Amino acid sequence: MSERYDKIKTYHYNNPMETFPGLTIDDLNRYLPAIKTVEEMSMVENKNLHEGIFLAKCMDGFTKLPSESIDLIISTPPKDNWDKNEGTGNTLQDYYQWNQKWIQESYRVLKKTGAIYILTPWEYSGMYQGLLSNSFQIQTRITWRDKKTTSRNTTWSDETSDIWFATKTDEFLFKQEPIGVNTIETQALDEIESNLWIDIPSVLNDEGHYPQKLISRILDASSFKLNWVLDPFMGLGDVGVACKSHGRRFIGFETNKDYLLLAMKRIDNS
Image (cartoon, rainbow, N blue to C red; front, top):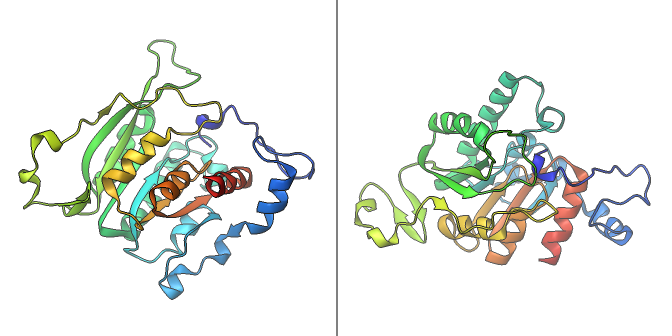
């Protein structure tokens, strides 16, 4: 998945005594039997959402979600080994087309007042701007201090990443208020925040988690309590942890069983 997880060595459970960092044998005994797969998702058929995290490819998970059912999507698309975990090819064109498909599905499942945030390194930022603009209303590009633990750049040090904020329509909710063509001009200037988030912690911790302050700011801006939040590439469960502490209902998809187990433990203990 992302280079964000480079510090974590991936294990597979051929040997039951060989555990993933952060998981104990007791954790495996507790969480392995509780794993839910995409086959257990029946949301489309009964039109009722069920909170939970699932071992599933994002496109398989999307097919189980009813149209206009999700309030907010927070997404960090994989850029390393994506073809093994999510895609069907390994070329840049395959990657572009795969991103196009899940973004189209995001548009389908979002409510009319819903929003999507895509967290991306600068190398892929332009691609997501173009893909989002095909169907979404792009509201802004947020830049935050995302200092990588390692950098392949031999010129300038990479210390920022982008977050694209887009909405399904021009009528959406922002900071507990309705925003639209008739209300946006009435906002006081001192209520409009900068899209340069320099106060977010600039260094990720050793486990590769996103700062909870980052996710919390997005949740506070674009969701209410009990809203449905989707993370189609859940990783280590950062969005799920934040959703639990903020009283949001969370659905997450992840293809890596090790990450899923650790996310289950983190969300359970948060």
